Image (cartoon, rainbow, N blue to C red; front, side):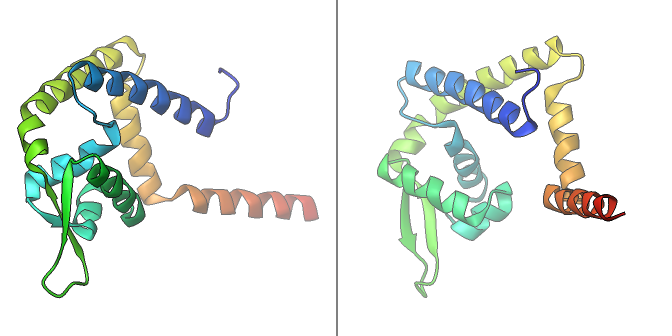
Length: 159
């Protein structure tokens, strides 16, 4: 893993974390996936919301939120209805999701505690590093950096 590319390392890390967290939900008797959490937390904070509002609140793409909401609807975590003009969909927590919130909160607290303990074992806290990486990408997106690197290589090769 030491010589792996950044994308491979990130996928490995997310897979490792999500698998463990998903298993903890199963052990708590919940059919729940980690990717649902930003949607659930947004609906807790804002109440019933459009896909666009959830996307804006979480920073997750519109299509990513839409796909997650579709999965959540199939599993009964949310219900979806239309706005008065019918142009947007409004997402709300289902009654069963609202009943599961106390158990989810316990799972989230345990996950936060474990994440903090992982940070303590590292030479530099992963949570801080991720915040810094996200800020750096907001300042200059990875695609811009790639384009610049390709231009630099092309110029160097043409000399």
